[in-house]
Image 1 (cartoon, rainbow, N blue to C red):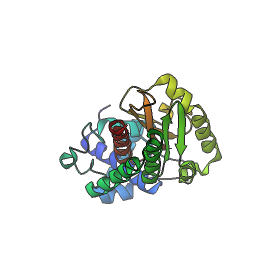
Image 2 (image 1 turned 90 degrees about the horizontal axis):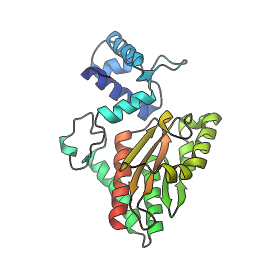
Image 3 (image 1 turned 180 degrees about the vertical axis):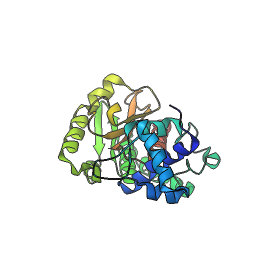
Length: 251
């Protein structure tokens, strides 16, 4: 699938605007941002919709990203490169969605939580608690064959989970997450499962972002977050990866 530069920019903007507002993004808003007519934006939105990257909720004239749209964003727009922190100054304005000072402060929170603990299990829990605080998502980690969860109440305060059906779907996913991680053992250093890509709880409309790291408990320990597909992916992916890297270095 090949998008024009303007289509990529529009998709990127829709995703980031929706992440901030949790409301469908309309053509008038986008037209102001791109300094073109609403008709021009509507035509580009129609093409993105045909490609399956955005969708129009029945109750709104605006558009929201689809799972495929988020996947394109993560894969093709270089939201987080392998050396994201080191390459920060080289990133384009569209990619630099975390301010340098803001990122540094967030990293400091994670490091402070980890370094304040003297044992491996409490250090991992501290890192999870920091991710909950920084992302507003549910945080998780594997510790000695068990799954540690934090921030469930915070996750369910997000607007997506006013629907009981979605809450039940997330609960089902969480019930099966630990045995799935043990069996599947995702092999990448950073693993992102968006919406229907989740191997369990496919209808829960959440994204699972996890980092693999080595710990005294296992060569395949995991830390990460679970949240709505409406994510600030650059921020969350960078913080999850940093938490995993730091735990591996310290433990």
